[in-house]
Image (tube, rainbow, N blue to C red; front, side, top):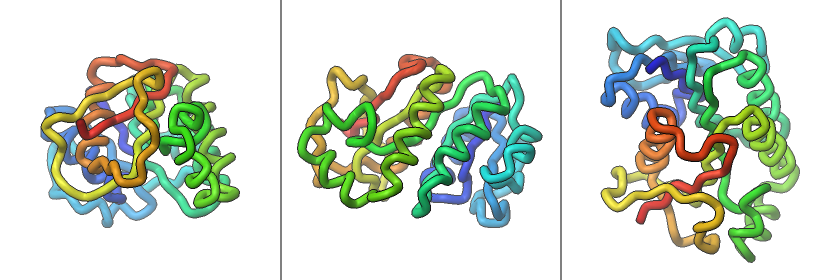
Length: 202
């Protein structure tokens, strides 16, 4: 498949790109500074400079054959929604977007933990929710991950919908490698189009 990884220089973006190449896909890895995409050169890897604030630049890289996987994260409100709009406007085949468990559509399932997360995110919460909703409205899949951690892919990992979501637990971490694997599974065999999915370590 032709996969496009957004925010490919971050830890989750690197995991997505590395695993996608290992699975035999062709990857266009987008980052503001492609030199920071810390992976060796490969015939199936194209590193591209791109910024979600430049919708025309995103549209120049993403086309109707692209499946976009986003690991975009930010400490500034507004960036996620801008990114979601730019990606959706570019007209890819599918979008698989990384969000946070306990926000927006998963807040009710998360229970009391969602309130804690809302306080931590502050003015970034609305940005996250609107970005998610933009992707969902376009038929994309939004992965609501819990607390991210380093470490290997969980051998007992699974992906569930909101109906089977466990309560939010600050101690229940999920590795970025596990999240990346779940997102790639969804790219290869869509199970949650237009819906929120949770990548779980076990």
